[in-house]
Amino acid sequence: MIQALKQLETEARQEISALSEFEKLADLKIKYLGRKGLFVSVSSRISELTPEEKKFAGQEMNRVKKTLEALFESKEESLSKVPSTSSGIKTDITMPGTFSSSGNLHPLTQVTMEVVDIFERLGFSLVDGPEVETEHYNFEALNIPLNHPARDSFDTFYLDNGKLLRSQTSTVQIRVMEKVKPPLKIIAPGKVFRPDATDATHSFMFHQIEGLMVDEGVSFADLKGVLFAFAREFFGPKTRVRFCPHFFPFTEPSADIDIWSEKRNDWLEILGAGMVHPNVLKAVKIDSEKYTGFAFGMGVERLAMLKYGVEDIRHFFENDVRFLRQF
Ligand code: PHE
Image 1 (cartoon, protein in one colour):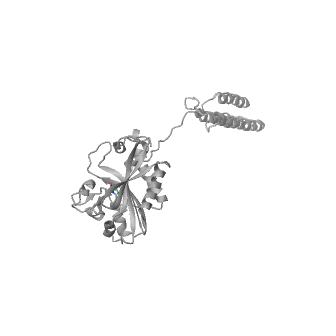
Image 2 (cartoon, protein in one colour):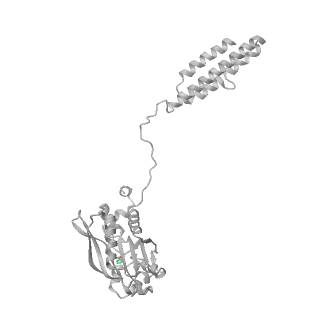
Image 3 (cartoon, rainbow, N blue to C red):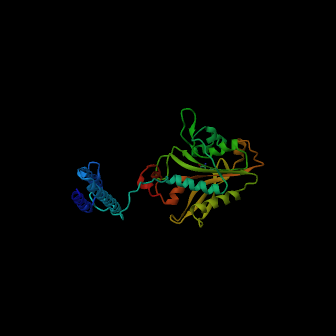
């Protein structure tokens, strides 16, 4: 029996040291040390021995068992240190890993967030208004009566129930001033709709960001200061800004604000603005003798096209990931 144990030990040593695949180690361990393994079957012969022989054989059994256990343990350790595939090929740990791809915000969302952030730092509060509106908010309250020619430039889509899709975010000015009395400073981004034929610079739906400040003693100089600060923060500190006289029914005086584009060597309009018309303040029951204010509205697509050099507005709405991934 002692002989058999020694033989078992030698064979096990050889087999363990020859083994190179971690996955096969468990099987080998079962073969030798399992409940029906070779060690148990050799050891069972102890019952055939005399009491003196038993004592020695018992010691030998313990020694061999401990030896085998230690051998398996150290083999397990050394094999698990070598990264291997089931085919035994070592893994190249310098290979790039597998990444889960994460998306990014739509460029128009990014621009909107950036603009809102700039105005929030200037003390404006973010507000929201409905896209489905009444004629009152889109026209009348903004000093555009039914027969006024300016209705044409803010024409929109009408719904069967007499409501319409807002054609400008200026509607939010009215909704806010109905509820909140001055002093107030708000910024209101959102979708607007106009029945324009789609081309490189027109879309039947686009985004605007409206701004409004009303308080005692607000002047055109405040409007200029705020919009200059915005343009330089958004387009860079050296940005040149120009105010051109313009007409809007809801502001007086009104201006179009242009920025200089080195790339195009030309001025480009980025927004409309002006001092809130007294008739607008009257429509929301704010004393136009006591309070004055300014308002402005900018096109988000226009800002994004200028900032990123996008040539065609349709890219923003086609959901082509090759375009969207670049932002
Ligand atoms: N609502 C105007 C437009 O859509 C922009 C504007 C807003 C002008 C506020 C003046 C004041 O063109």
